[in-house]
Image 1 (cartoon, helix red, strand yellow):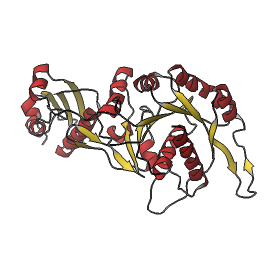
Image 2: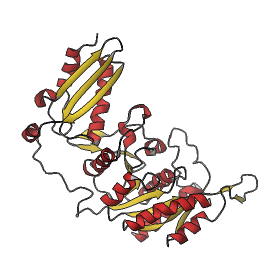
Image 3: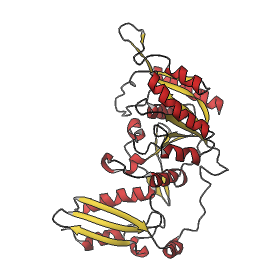
Image 4: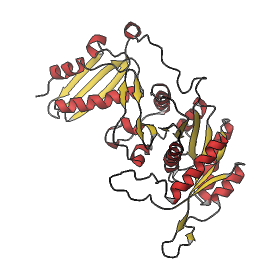
Length: 348
């Protein structure tokens, strides 16, 4: 039988993700409510920092632990601990210089598009994998917080782990990955407003143990909304690639994303035209399903070049390997991504 005492005993042994002290020590348990008829548990906790990746990690652990205890559904709320409690238990060790510090040698590359559905995340994932295949240390931040898809595209099934007060990103195909998708239960929608999203995004830079990276790719949300603007302001030194399809409308809308990059002093490395053509298996001829010329027109408007054209086809099927959007190195698109990666290296 689920009881308040059992829930409290469970919470007493769990730790604040920043102070590494139990909630019993921090007196962080503010409220426990149980609805026996629905087997629902509602908990309110005070922690050192709210609206962060660590909070999402804690939330995930709490939901799992409370369901193991017998809860059918769980409601969680968080508030901030009093300043005197934080000061009492604040770790004294200095953090290593972060990705955004002046001493960082990591090169940032944002991947943007004007609209959804043009393959921006596919381009991000495969460009990162291609850079890793060329011997670089690479990471991805899935900054498309409402439409996160990078973990699924790469076939990532595990979740990040905590080490001290840092989150360890998941690694696959030689690429370290951090995404909101790791911290959302059962593919639930993210119903957050701009300020909370901005804090979450900042924590991906400051509170994740990336180690040494040569390149960090950012999969931006489509368009020119708050999250994209936050990234542009957060990383003034970032370079940018704009993704479009050959269709004139997609290219027209993508020009806005390109102009946003220019207006925030982000250098454009070029345009990638996705779904450029389809090679008929019967004739071997190229068929231009979405028309022609969109990438070239966009590059002309933005005063840059087309650095890659991807065909409309799936990766090869590999037994025992689940990665629905990662092209093999010997695949025609895999070879094109290697060419894109080499151009990026040359220009950076």
